[in-house]
Image 1 (cartoon, rainbow, N blue to C red):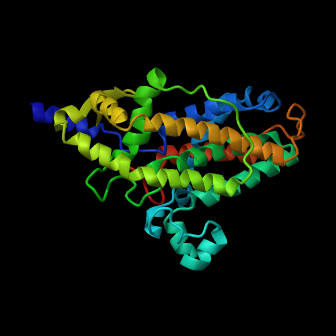
Image 2 (spheres, helix red, strand yellow; image 1 turned 90 degrees about the horizontal axis):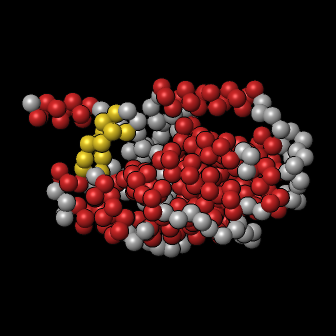
Image 3 (cartoon, rainbow, N blue to C red; image 1 turned 90 degrees about the vertical axis):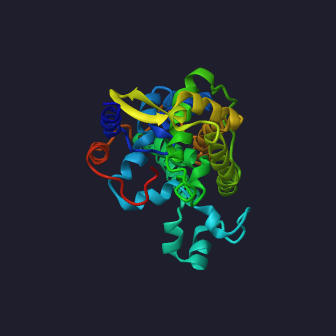
Length: 321
């Protein structure tokens, strides 16, 4: 009977995994708003729920188009050893050296962040409120992804080291369990980024350098926890699922010396600073009097289609679970 119950519970195990998880991305975008100057808060604070809710649109888009997946990561360790000088920092130079197929296969997050930054800057110049909010929400997602160590290694879910599931564990389970109780998101103010390219590459290099620690700590801790203590069946969203136990999660966070909290805090600071930089580069337009405010029918249709694709389709391109 015990075996039958376990088998039935296994049927309810959730398999989807998202970058930082929906919870993580939403909280990161939410807290980023509070780092902005008053001139930007007049727009961002009243729309904080939109910025939070739509922070996960890029993950939903991964269920709609295969081109989306590479925008969330870069397997930087396939390009040699730290600091990966063999990989040109400019996209066209990297494509010329390795081919576009190769660059796309191993991920483009640092380049995509720069593309999104230019689009956001243009939206501020156009004084288009709908575009500003939509692009701000989405660039926040990609910037946060660049701060995740497992987004900067080819062993992105421990699939090469017998640690399948560590991706969701680090970026979803840990913050969902500990963020509200233990993490501190009171940070200073956004600052102007002089060199966007160098800034985002520095974050990617930090992530790449931390990937081995993320994997090694889980492997070492697993030796101390037998299976029935490492995993537990818990209710989530009305379903009973098998996931890393609370005890194992807390011990892992302690072993990492608060790495997840630090990377979330750094994500929040970076996102706010990217928003601020785009606004400054656009000439600091008055955000109280924007020319275009409403979302178009095309925007609304896209939001609906993303939700539908996420609910009904499977991920396209490389999965993270």
